Structures are given as C-alpha cells and as structure tokens.
Image (cartoon, rainbow, N blue to C red; front, side, top):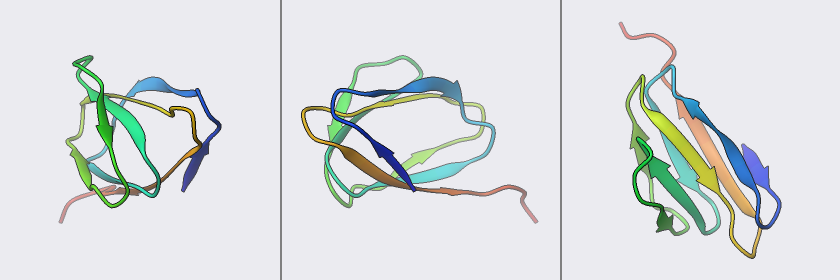
Length: 73
C-alpha cells in the first residue's frame, strides 16, 4: 500500500517483477516513459517485469495497492 501527498512523484523505476497496481484514489501513471494517463479508483494496471514505470499524484493524495508476482511456478 502506497500513499503519496498531493503533487508528489514516485521515483521512476524499473519494475523487477510482474505486478498489478490498483489505484484507490485518482492518480497519473506512465509506462516506458510514454504519456501520462489519469487512472481512477478501481482501474487495475498491469506492468510486466522489466518495464519502466512512474507514478504521480495530482491536487489530491494518491493511494494505491500493489501486488507483485515474485516467482512463477
């Protein structure tokens, strides 16, 4: 679970594991340094392993839930 204050950018990083992000409030997301897109509450986002990922909040705090697949069977 991650909470960002208003007008905060989560540091860009390379996602080491496949993951799903579920915004619990509105926020903006980008993949592979592409355009920013606003995602609303309940819009699940999938990020494959090795993808370049960034997140930022807008005028309101952003809360999001992360789930990672640490290893496959």
